[in-house]
Image 1 (cartoon, rainbow, N blue to C red):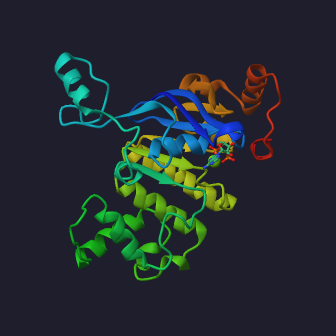
Image 2: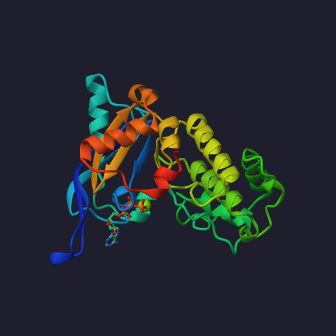
Image 3: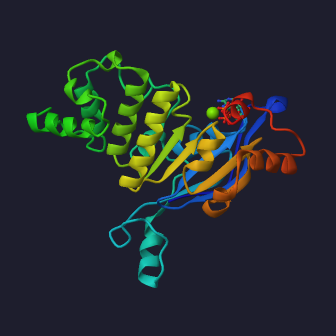
Length: 288
Ligand SMILES: Nc1ncnc2c1ncn2[C@@H]1O[C@H](COP(=O)(O)OP(=O)(O)OP(=O)(O)O)[C@@H](O)[C@H]1O
Ligand SMILES: [Mg+2]
């Protein structure tokens, strides 16, 4: 799906440089749900910035493998004709503009106000999302489209289907994050990047959003990367866990190994690798 080859990203110049990403190589397979943990400043958000195009790497390359007619899931090919199709579908996107990547990469941030336009109605917000990919085409909000939006909103179970004409600023943080998640998923991204998307919510809403995330990932066969400071969440969700530190991926744990691990094991692994204690109040507090 996405492959990073020796990606490095340096901020600043001269004596003040920060190597936010150091030689990162990573292959994300279609259908993967990868959880990512790491201390503050480890480079997690910068990794997303490189993948989504909001920062261009200083070195290395990023490739996208999109689904083709002969390979609809974007799976690695197994026989020669499919392999030829695969080669056609792999693209170097290292320098592709962010707005172009936004058509196939969905990204959700910690701040629940960022994913929706507060001063616009719920229907108009959904309309913008619906129009994504239909550049230049004027689509008006028809009765059947309103019904279609209502149906989608019913999935959230929050009663928002009856409030299509309310401005989105009237909704709670949890409702807005659920809406952002729904709209992002409905635009069928090849890759969904979640950056601590439940961290700003109260525990009840955080749980609702996490449940929705897992349900959508399963129902829509999404490929997901999820940054979290909650080590329990990182262990429970997904099929692979990455731990970043100082711009590097220092742990890469598959589903089978993850199932055996506890948060204490992860802290110990960090100690063994880095020969120092894990200093991150938020991560440790969330996991005692
Ligand atoms: N635009 C920028 N200009 C300069 N330095 C930056 C920029 N963005 C990030 N950095 C630096 O790069 C390093 C990695 O930051 P990043 O935001 O990726 O960390 P993070 O792992 O997401 O941390 P957190 O858990 O606090 O969100 C930090 O040292 C940060 O200060
Ligand atoms: Mg971050």
